[in-house]
Image (spheres, rainbow, N blue to C red):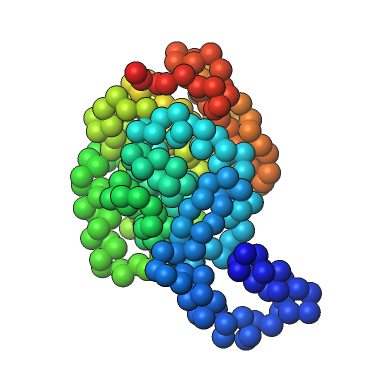
Length: 294
């Protein structure tokens, strides 16, 4: 309620541009939101209750991709001991939602922005057993030097320690395969995870600003072995996919060749796809999926 009242005041036409006032009030406001030391409660996508650090509640999380959050929620509830691979985790919305929904779920969050990796950890810090989160700094692609998950974790820890990344809301940025920064690690999903997950039900959430096909090409073994469900954000607008060398039709054809069904959950500035392997289910409805593994 405090957040809703504060947002209404903050965006009142007569007060919206009073930045000096809001800068002065920000710290006491966050202290009030986090009173008691357990973060502030937010209903992500209007569906999933999480507790997060107050400074990460600045976005309108209650309206965040409700169709995708709903699909995630249904899948996690059907597979409470499953694995979420959150590629392009940003500040941890999907990772945290999965961890609050299912205390036995395991989350592997990956992002090319080191501050976002730190923010994902912070977003999930109040979840039951936060040690279930593995956060990796790097870009996922189909052309990278072999690297194990253990090595990627060690690199991430070293980078976090060296940079002192704090994961605050004002330091986050989007980075994808068009970023030519040489310090950005690049990994194939098959190298990191194909021998690690075992036979646990697995959902891959992917939001990589146009590089979707590169991610999928580097995960062929994983997809064939585990028949993972996919929650894809596909970016045909603004030439994002073309800059990465492919089109939305290329992504659809790739998935169809792997015998996946595709359902478009919603379209805003990107398309949200739910993709189901036909080998495990005859339906692409996330509310009626059969378990991937018994």
